[in-house]
Length: 238
Length: 238
Image 1: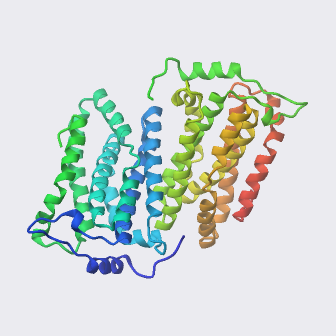
Image 2: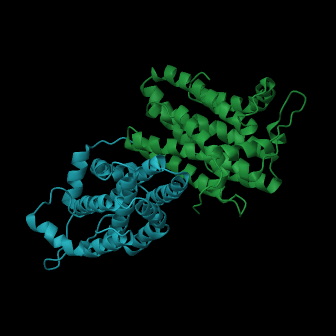
Image 3: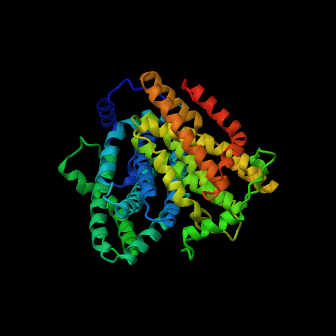
């Protein structure tokens, strides 16, 4: 399982970026029209699952009550099982570490950005980033060959810890209504950071043409709408 | 799932201790002769699984390489799945939180004692405490009714992350031989703390009769022997 890499992350990233194209339809890009390579798609997804997984681990540790801890353990079980199941979808000759490696540094930076200062921010972050990333990778996976797409979507949607997180967040906000304002602000910060991560997943950091973000915006509309509904369910302004 | 408790932890612990007896055979206690109540047995076990789980989460986060992180994620998946499967073995009318609650404070103290100062100590701790606790609860579970015992042993032995942890520890010690001396000392500290936790699981804190530890020692011999083999496999003195 363990191998060391003969190329630097920068070299690997550069070669991936050369291979990447973005399909535009008029001035509109449809995520499902992109055709990611399976190993690159899963490499990105796995690297981001590692971020979510570490958030969940921290949230278990910092949980203020035993009840909250037990709920978070279940969320952690779900994300760690999902990680294992996604690894299994890699092509047989693809090392999971090699697939993840080009995206790892960027996902670690993302992990720091969305870490939060306390348990409440951690749990909202876990809820918001998991929701956005799942919706994004389900849509982006639309460009994979049918069998791969079906397998990926099945793993991403099989189990969800979201109701447990909602339960914890709702209880926290009811117990301390002043938390709501901070959580709403934190949610906005999270959606910004996560959209950027999604943008980089599609374009790579090199493609920073001024029109690119605007062209991709419509593709993100559904994803942001689902985020707004998640925030509404918590009584928070998105 | 979430309920609040109408008794203090101290009251619950006291009532559990009154119900607990230790069977001595001459001056020898056999763990399998103890007959724990299923809810108490699982409550203790679950509370300690929470400790192991949090160690694994921290070890994922602090892993020095992506390869190590991936191995630790698999260990984390195994312990979080084990936790879920053990919860399912509780009697239908038993709330998992209520079952764990009397043992939670003690297990949190235990978590602090075995936390370690860096990633290497965390991983050895995860390896050593999981090994000792699994062996102990398999033996202690010998006193449960047959069906319960079989179900518990099946969950405890179905999957193990131990080879992954051994791989990481061996690699670390080969890369830095000076680590061995510190790891051996840390291993001794861990076995002491974990034996005490096992002792408390059987006796409860109130039964501190001078002869009690000596009477239980033979029951722990096999468990300590297995620990010594684990340390040997790492090239460390137990």
